[in-house]
Image (cartoon, rainbow over all chains, first blue to last red; front, side, top):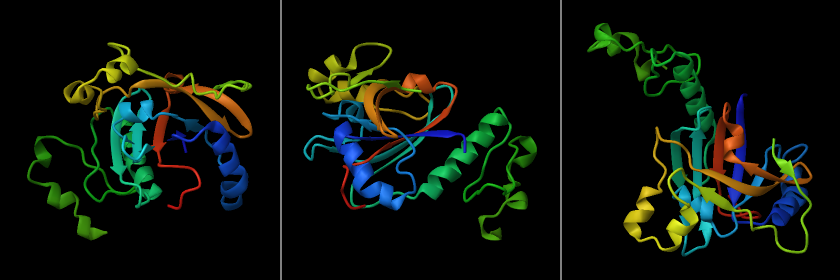
Length: 137
Length: 86
């Protein structure tokens, strides 16, 4: 899909290996396809603002980083609630489209891949309702 | 992508280096007060702080730096722990 996934936790690379072998490979054919990084001590997590010092673990932080190394978006959840990968993919596709259009296009609220995009300019001011309504979906 | 290595008896955690352009962040964090720490927070539209970490990938132990992925989109996902429930 054109995006490299990296997962990070404070677990050791040995634990990553065991988790992949004993559980994840039974949930996903062939096991985890992306690198599982070990951030023992949470130093990188601290840098990204997701490390919980009291608990000694990292919260569920997800960062979309563009080909120039710029953070385009992030979301951080406390541990009990899992994320929705569909939303990450939707955002990635939107950021990719906007980047390819070199700033001439924008994706409105509730936009999904395949939906019309906006071309911001003087004519669009006050007229977004004509070309886009989240309710149309 | 990523450089393979063979782990020895020492736990391979020494790499674990995180850095920004300005100053060695690890040191900055060690004597950081709250306001200094806020400076290291990630912001949208700003460069993602680089780091180098050990990893497990498809049966191998490798080392990855975020900077290796320049030119590609990256989804960086932190989570609390292996073998947990969510």
